[in-house]
Every structure is written in C-alpha cells, then in structure tokens.
Amino acid sequence: MDTIEIKLNLKKGLNIDLQLINQLRSYIDSITNNGNYRYCEVLQVSKNGDLIVKISYPRYFAKANAYLITRRSECFEVQTHFINSIFNDPTWASIIENITLSRVDIPFTYLMNNEEQFASYENIFYIFAFVYARKKENARTKAYLDLQNRNFETLIYSPNGSVGKSANNKLEVYNQALNLRNKLEEEVWNEVVSAYKDLPFRIRMEVSKRIRLRNNFSPVEFANLDILGMYFEDYKKYILENVLDFSIIEELYNYWAYELSQRLNQVRMNKGFTYGEFIYQNQTLIYDYEIVRRALGIAIDNINTRENAVTRVRKILVEYEKTNNIILMDTYGTLKRIESQIMGAYLLD
Image (tube, rainbow, N blue to C red; front, top):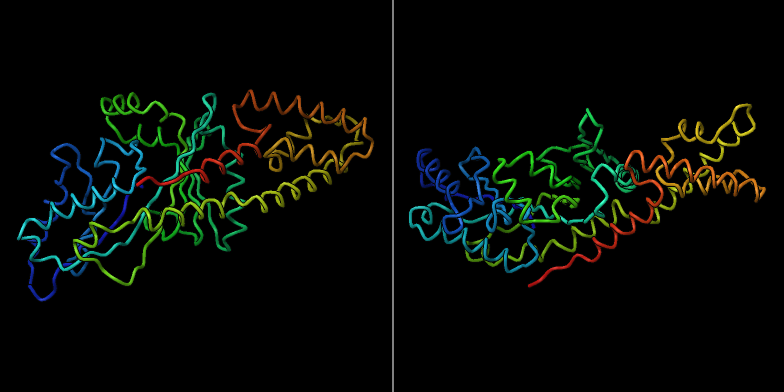
C-alpha cells in the first residue's frame, strides 16, 4: 500500500467561511504520527469547499515510502489515527459530513539480482509496452530517461492516453531508489538507504486507479475500511494480465522471430554479410536472444549451418549484454521471475 486520496465533504448550508477551511487545511497538513512523521496533506480545496486529502501509509511509519506496507492492520492504524486526529476536535467534527474514497495506489516490488540495475531491464520495459498495447485499445506508454546516459528512470503505462497524476487508471514502473534520492535531503537519504539494504535493487510496479464508489463513509466506517484487502488482488491481477500475459508474449516472440527470419533470408547470401552487422541493423526486433534463435530456426534448414549461426550470434549477444549491462540472453526468464514475484505477493493481517 502506498497512498490514497480522499475527499472530506463539508456540511452544506452552514456557510463555512474560507478562513475556517484554510485553518482545517493547515491543521491536516500538520498531522503527525506521535509527533514524528507527517503523512497527510491537502492537495486542493474543491469549488464547493470540500478538501482533497492525500494520505501516505509508509510515511506514517517512516521518513520515506521505502517502508513497505504489508499488513492490513497497518492500514487500519493509519486510518484510525487520521480520523481521531480530526474528529476528536469538535470544531472539525461539526463541519465535516462524511468521507469519499477517490484514489488508491498499491505498489508491488520486484527485487533485481545484485549485479543488475534498473536500466538493465530496458528490453523488459519494451515488452511490457507491446503487451499493454495489445490489451488496451488506446494504450499509451511514456518513458522518462536520463538523456546523458540514456537510462530509463520511470515508465507509465496508461490505457487512455493520459499519463499524468490525474490519470484514471495506470501502471507506473520506476526505480524506487532513484525516485527517493531525487526527493530526499542528503542526510535523510543516507538514513533511508542504510535502513533498507534492498532499496537499490527494487523495481516498483505501482497500480493507480480512480475509485468510483457510490457510497460515502462515516468516520468510523472509514477507519475500519479494508482498502488494501478490497483492492490488493485486483491490482495484482492488473499487472499480471496487462504486462505479463505470456500468451501474448509468446505471440510477440513468434512474430518478431518470423520478421527477423524474413529479413535474414533477404541478406544472408549477400557478399560481405556478417551476423554482427545484421544484429546491429535489426536491434528493434531483438529483445531476447531467444527471438534470434527462433529466427535462425525458421530461416536456416541445414542443421550444421544453423548451429554455426547460433554459436556466432550467441557470442555477439553475450558480449553486447555484458558491455551494455542490459538483459538480453534470458529476457523471457526474467519476465518469468517478475511474474513469480508478483504472483507471490500476499497480505498479512
């Protein structure tokens, strides 16, 4: 669990002035867990005076969202603290009617191998995009990267073209360590990276959806609302079905292999042909050594010729993977490992 957005609906007909609303806003922004961490903020005040509030569950327990929420009881603790902080004050209790749940963000964490970096997963991110486009008719993927080293930092997969913070339904994949490093002051960052040893190896896969429930909640109902339990499995399914659908991944691999084999047949007998040059010219189809291996199987009938070609290509791609620190020889296996970790994610009480 990461964050939620709620709307505090103020009672209508009380002629609540702007000064009182701003006082409530300042009060919410200052709420802390026993004086330690601020975990909620008012994002905006709507036209009719209602307050849109963001609540961060990890920041209730720690200085940054490197803290991983795994228990439903932790969520109940945060919600109860928030409700008590507001509704135990008679001034605020007298002007708030009820609460609307409007957005829920739930992250899943994949741990890379120690020798890997986020940028090593470039081919995986591309395959995610192709699968997502097959699943969502108007899908759009947006990538943020460091232009100096061409490394991906964040990718957003959205079904309707909208990739901003207001997007109704999206998957965001990002380098959590870098994300926090850019947000935190040096002293806090050093504390965080020291406390969470696995942070440099985390790939964050966060599903974010607008919630359109018909009912609003009383303070007691909201404090006891099992938000994580309500949405955890649905959000996990969103990742597995929309970027890790292996029936589509198999179709893509076979399609790329066929396309590559046709290109290979066109140039293999040309004077001066080399597999190194061929791979360089067709990088847009080569996301995995397995794709090239399948292409060679389609294009070359002679077993000895094919085995010789496989040996050459493998040597070239092994060197490319090593030089560029990019997953290439076992992209499919890496996708399977991501699937396994996401499928294995579960909740504790």
